[in-house]
Image (cartoon, rainbow over all chains, first blue to last red):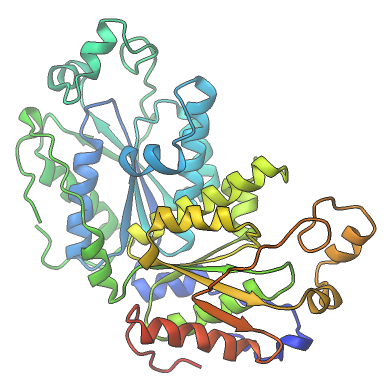
Length: 210
Length: 210
């Protein structure tokens, strides 16, 4: 810690910022992004929330960015044009980057269908801190669940460019974590993510999780 | 913690989010925004950085949003038109709101010259969580310091609409914290802010700060 006790009237304008290393040390973790991607209804938000509960129980400091807190806040000025969708992901990536700089583990739960957009975020955050989580649920399963009735509307032509129906979903070529939601329940999927963080040294071994 | 162990193939789409109360409890603090406002060169960033060092020493969890991490990242698409300046502050307020939701103490260091813009952020974050810090340094002192040579350029007409020269600065009518930088050094100003947080129960009594 550099002292900045020079009188303000005769200042050396040295801003000694708290470093990301100091923030990480305080939180006993390696800050990073868990970037969940998958079709609408695949289970991204539900699994990410379960991961957050397990992380909290393990003493880790995390935060989840999802449609609820982004689309109604920072990104409320954006629509669903191609340009706005790209800007939506760009801003999410920038906010995720700020949370990483703050020493946090940040989870994001957005369809984020295009590889190029995800790779831009990876480049921004840094490869080592960007962990891509593919929530791999077949389209037929997502459409059968249809929790918000969006697939029904898309099939009826009421939502244009709906991912999986008339707009492409580009799955990760080599996701860091691959969740097969058809073969495991939510808590098991969440545990798979937390185990990855533990094994790769992002967090200390969780105590009392589950 | 609500259990979400229903098999993913037959899901009840209940997202049980970790609450802001749980995040605050984990961090032993009341999340809030310290919104620094003042002229260019008044000492906002320098004092905010000193506050962060004191908060870290006190075991609090904080993060500073300033020109360095916002203008080159999230807000890199914004210029200096009236509309862009308003959007700049809006986005900063939204990001601050996310950090508050994450349980953090967030400091912001921007000129933010217009009352209306600051009041919009206060309304968004909630009055109790928005603490306005007026870094009160006379224009003549800021201009004499001129750490980035901006006043010189503004006087030469090279920077239009420069706050304090040819664009208004609207000081807070009743700032929560009023820092007179001409009468106290940086560490003393920072201590005044940390004492406010302590006295008002946002943090526990700092140990080992300073």
